[in-house]
Length: 331
Image 1 (tube, rainbow, N blue to C red):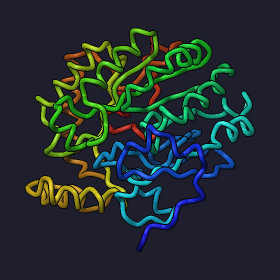
Image 2: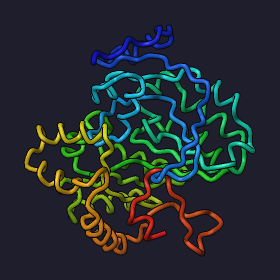
Image 3: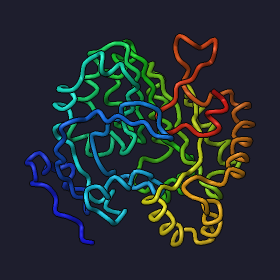
């Protein structure tokens, strides 16, 4: 099926910063509501906010590729080649926000696409959203990103953290630069992400590592995980969340096709471990949890952020959608 035509181009979509990114098309996606209520088996009752649809980072394992199917795209690669920009996102949030409504459930920013991907440098949609959220008190907000661009908004993050509960998850699944380039070809290097984490922590922003997904036979080795924990500890991360890969329908098709070309020796393992659906074989998951548990005990890093008022009971918060078995057992 041929990709559908884009909506009429808005003049704001023709900026020089994005024109320089060859092969990526940007289109406006009209939006009436920005707050999406999500309550599934993998995600608790929460609001999700995604100012963009699609992501140029092109992570091979990305579960959100299916969202482009609703727009008529059947090639998983279109998720990183055609980015939809919700130019009306701030206005939509203004229209539907109130303190009572926003406090009703946690708010997760960046659950489907990175809110600080390169387009954000031009459109400032995430920043405008944070400006709106910073006016309120008593909210529960989490952000997940791979991008150093989030440090641009430290002023707003500090304001939000002073009025509400805030957690920033820096997504990092390996500190091996070459492996990261293979798995996350368009994303910042591991070194840059660790530096971003350190910068946030030094600025007083509650921040930790989102180490999901862990992929069998690729980044699940004890040495690899130990290096990841060590990097998080050096950056003074508040936590490191760890969980296994899951393969939803669209991501399964894309990931296994990529794996066949990039790491064909791993393909039989994945067909075996994911033979019964999108979740990995529970026996492998148990081994991963045990391995992570040993390493976690050595470094003393919790599996998720602690509630400021509940530290004595070690009650943890978790970014909706990233809670693995290992985190559930630890909380």
